[in-house]
Every structure is written in structure tokens, then in C-alpha cells.
Image 1: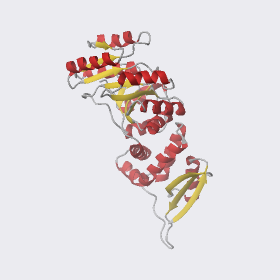
Image 2: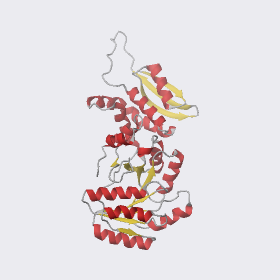
Image 3: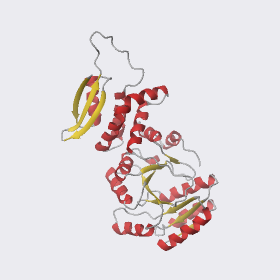
Image 4: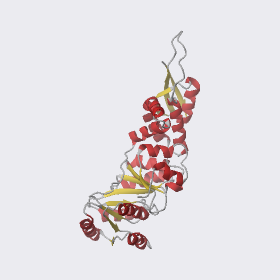
Length: 340
């Protein structure tokens, strides 16, 4: 086996260097960043003297999958350190998964990237019913109210008990907006303004829904406004709640990271991504989940309330990242999203 180390400015460039030097049989075995850039160690099997040339592999070589993943992560604006960690997680499994993908008639890069995503991230879809109230939090305009309506609609159409509470009493028309949806669904909407009234509303709604789904909408909160964040924290303080951050796709990666950290400090454990139909770069979503250690749950891929909210798993997420994110109609079909 011949082993060689390469240094480049980025992982895609390093992979191209490996391909040029070692050919299609080259396999990346380690990578690390230093002051000179990204340092990659790769290996290739040398033929023994007199041995016949090995026949071409029956599947895509590992380097093909890694190069496709590196290019996709770069296209989505994924920061270098996170892209390198994903590629490092993918490298040891590339050959094995490429062969498995061939046997299953599945795209090899998708399988390899899915394995890497599963290594670095948690995937925790929202349950149809749960005993702990589900509270949606996030910055202004992230789509919390429509997401609450989608979740309520999904439950009603599945003939499951659901209750809805809103604490979004400051934004003009917020209560009326959610009220319009709940009236169509023939659900009562409870409105609260402070911690005591929220506690009472949870008790009342819980008695009505049992172990069904209890949804709580909160006001859009500026993550960089300490006073607003403190008020939201005081509203929810001490209550047993399943706290989910709602964040739109396609934003700046650093803004998304800072926003995710701010809501993590308020107890958010999962990330629900909205506006996927209006975004073509998902690097900010990866960064937000990574820095705040949030588990991915569901995605919103259309503004229509009766469809487009679907659970996400490593394979379906890998399909969105490879190659380009398709138009919204293709996203829905690709994710298998159906009317709830």
C-alpha cells in the first residue's frame, strides 16, 4: 500500500489532488487542519510485481462519493471545519457503503453522506402524540404560527386529540391568524399572557386532550435582545415542556449559529426547519444544529397548511444536500411528504 499526505486550502481541492496523484483507487484515511490548510493522508493499493492488473471495481470508487459530498457541502456554504468533520466521518465507510448502495440501486454519495450525518447529528421526529406539551420558539418571522397550524392539522386529520395555546399576544393579528386556523379545525384556542395563565391553560388543555398533542405558540423573540429573551424564559420557567427551535433555512451561517445558541440556553433540544421551499443553501441549518447540539425533527417545505411538514432522517436529508436542492414540488416528492 502506498501512503501519501497532501496539503490544500480546502477539502475539495485536497480530494482533487488525491485523485490526480493516486488515481481512482485512492482512499482518504485521515484529515486534519493546521496553519498550512487542510492536511489529508490518502492510500492506494500497489500491484505486486508481475501481478495482473486488477479489474475495474464494479461500483463507484470511494473517492467519487467523497468528492461529490465535498463539492455539495461547499455549494451549501458549509463552514470548513464542519465539512471536514463530515468528510472524516464518511471516509472510513465510503467503500463499504458504496458497494452496499450499488447492490440496493441507491446513489452511493447519498448513502455515504447519510452515514456521516447520522454520526454527527441526532434525528428526533416529532411524535403524533406525547404527554409533554410542545412549545415552539424562534426569532420573528421564522414560521412558528403556521407550523403550529400544520401540526394541529396533521393531528386532526389523523383523528388524534390536540390542544392549542398561544402566548403570541404582542404581534398585531397573531391571535387572529392562529384563531382562523383553529376555527376551521374546530379547536379551542387558549390565549395566555404570563406564567400563571400559561400554567392554567396547560392544565385545562391537558385535561381535554389527555395524552394527545398540546401545542404552544410563542411570540417571535429577538435572540440578541436580552430583555426579550429573559421575558420568554420567565414565561416558560419551571414548566415541563418539549422546547423546539423553529428556524428558517437559507440564512447566514453565523447568524444561524448565534440564534441557535441563544435558544439552546432557553432549553431548546430540537430544530424544526422552515422555508425549505425558498432556500437553496442549507449550510446554516447544519451549523445551527451542530453548534447548539440540536436534534433535527421536521421540515416545512411549503407554505400550505395541509401539507409539507414532514419528519427528516439522515437519508432524506442527504438527498436534499446532493446535488442541488430541487424546487419545492420536487422536495415534497423526494421527502415523501403527503397530506397528513
